[in-house]
Image (cartoon, rainbow, N blue to C red; front, side, top):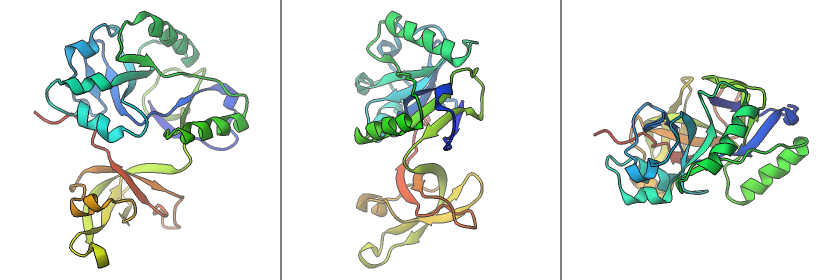
Amino acid sequence: MLAKVYEHGIDTSAYFVSEKLDGVRARWDGKQLISRGGLVFASPEWFIKNFPAIPLDGELWIGRGLYEKTTSVVRKQQPHDGWKAVRLMVFDLPEHGGVFSERVKTMKWLATEVASPYFAIIKQQTVANEEDLREQLQSVMAQNGEGLMLHRKTARYASGRSHDLLKLKLFADAEATVIGYRPGKGKYTGQTGSLKVQTDQGIVFFIGSGLSDAQRRHPPPLQSRITFRYQGFTKNGIPRFPVFLRVRNEQPENK
């Protein structure tokens, strides 16, 4: 399942609310961990020992603000001890068959039955109204969190984007592909001034804000996927005030 963006005025009582973890998306098929792109993660045997023999949807996660560290661990071709810092944070059961409220009950049961320090269930809560939802968002953001996810209680698991799964953040973000560079000026002469990127909708624009000095010297490679933050769109559909956040480097390395 993929999330749509939360819109003001939605009946929040119809949804479960959980923290949006900025980890690496992973599917457990009952035997191995698989990336969003369909490649198998080289997780150690001791990491997946005692995982249940049913499909799970979740995030490989170390902690808030540690996305880059997580990707550096899980992308390696061979199992290694770095996985000791990682947990699979489960948020759904793709083949359960019941509505989400029923799947939440099963996930709570799994949390008590699975004996593994590397397995956890993302907490699902209810909120009374939109004001409570905003307060919860502020609390998560104050702890360096990413945002919130809202999952309709009566929804069955289905692929693709729908209003059954929503994300709520203080700023909108999206992904794009690096297709070129603009040279820097002034103190950035000889370095990268901005990234030329293209969205999945074919919109081309430049992102200069958010790049560190190291990234200006060694920018994300061509065809790499990046995440950026923005505030609305221009009349031509170009994201306003785009800010580079990170490289979305989640796929396991090719062997």
